[in-house]
Image (cartoon, rainbow, N blue to C red):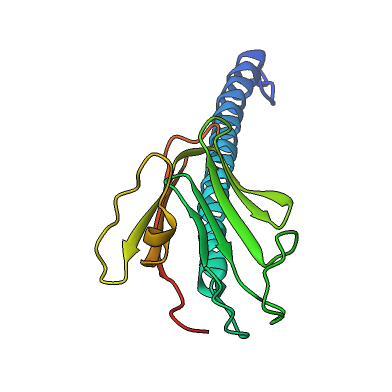
Length: 192
């Protein structure tokens, strides 16, 4: 009599197949987890780069319009100039005066303790960048030579000689290994 062989899979074959499937599933889960962490890090990096760029664009906008004086009233473009603070003025409505409570006055403040760069428009304070690890203003005279900044900031006579404003900004947001660095040099207006 011939013996018939049983068809199908044995318990050992099922266990081996299940173990292989679990190994493949574990590898896939690890790959998806790594991809998600990479996506979060890239998103944080992109946000830091965008934040730094937008802060510089806001400063550029305000510096370029500082000193606008259509009434020729002798407006002072730079009201304060320090290593961590810059106050700009422009007569935007052409009435011959600068309203300190409006957008005719714009200030930029590097707050090292709060790790923030803020923009103050009139009396309204707006944070431009958080996670700031380095922030500082530099000033060049009309000939392009760097100006030394004393402890109390530049005096009125020195502020009148400013030809360009520079900002060096370094951001290191929480959870990000690399930092975003930007520097910009912006010329002041010489005539209305």
